[in-house]
Image (cartoon, rainbow, N blue to C red; front, side):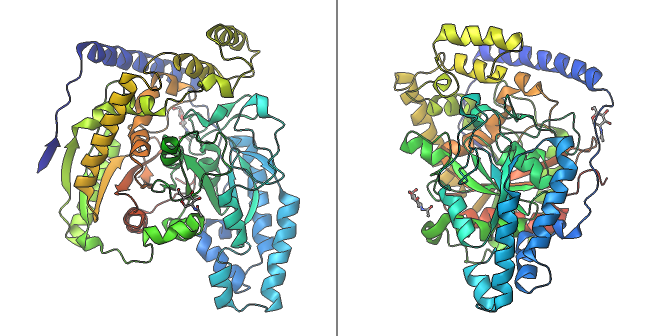
Length: 528
Ligand SMILES: *[C@@H]1O[C@H](CO)[C@@H](O)[C@H](O)[C@H]1NC(C)=O
Ligand SMILES: *[C@@H]1O[C@H](CO)[C@@H](O)[C@H](O)[C@H]1NC(C)=O
């Protein structure tokens, strides 16, 4: 059965442009294949098995003195040193401080001041090392967001989420790489360079939490924290074969993230959330990060998978995007089949036609008074941008090429506050209503996180709009979890996202846990 929800015609001009782009992208891919050939460096295997365990399990072992926090922090440091020359995901450490905090954590356990039950309740992540991206404030560390103008900026205070996690005993060991101003889905900037995919170093890690996605895939820290305004948690989670959750809007505080959202609307698009190798870790981390807002999520309420309403959509058919890879569709079919066989649910295929407009809705509603260029350069006039593009081409600009192109394009398209802007805000409202009606209070939608596996470096330039699979979900403020579903024939991660209605994060997380068990979840890079 297949329901089609409203019909959105696509103009002739756009259809032609769509075809032309497909041809260009195919030609570009051909040359990238030739260029990269069989290049690609292999990662050393994980030496310490403890790094493969879920964060909740590591925490339990520390509490019960089966392992010390110092040992586990040292294992992370060794692993980061082993892999970073290959993938370049880690950009700043606080190892000395982290080891000091680890000794304190071990001391607290040994002292017997609190028994294991008390520790589990009050310090559930005591002694567990984690990392976050270089745009979320960690006191005393840089917070560059990949912008050369900010290369010396040091955060004076922890972001709200970091404060909460440290309060529950977790230990921050350092920062991971991001794209310039976190506004592109390939992780590359002119301070720290380019991050490479651990499954194949010729490919991207995604963005903007790309360094973090990679860090989790290589098991360099026990869990990670990312942020997502257009797919910045879910895309890198997907390209790196791990789990990533973007929470419902207005649940987790965005305070301490740069750039900070400038309006209520943008604040509702942006979500800070966990990125992990194991689905079981997402919920306890979200619970801490949400603080008092956690009560809105009813995380402790049991989810009956048998009673879930499951919907799935294979593609959005948006112009200028790639068709969804058959391997991803195949994986989604297996999930549908699995839920049907094991839980007797009757998944229903739907086609929400308004999703074709994902790209213009996201771009229009992301517009703000200040131009993009304002955040990455001294002067953001069109002539300065053009001058900077020239400097970039001859290799002497602090800005990335895509950063400058984004700044230039910000002058075109729908302008903030215009009639067209309002038109797309309305379209957003309509689409939100469609989703609410379909999902109700007990529904999930299975949807691609991205239409292709990880492209080659720089290839996103000709595949720019593929990010709309994740971005539209930000506009709607819905919770969504990316779930890995194994590797493609080329050895690259594939997966899907699981979306639910507002504040129904627990449904996404419950399905993610099921699929982790059934489909194997994270796979160590280089193992297969
Ligand atoms: C990485 O990708 C290149 C180019 O597509 C390919 O030739 C190579 O075999 C891949 N490496 C691995 C380890 O799969
Ligand atoms: C709870 O949500 C409100 C509204 O989004 C936000 O301002 C506040 O910071 C959140 N609290 C926490 C602990 O994140």
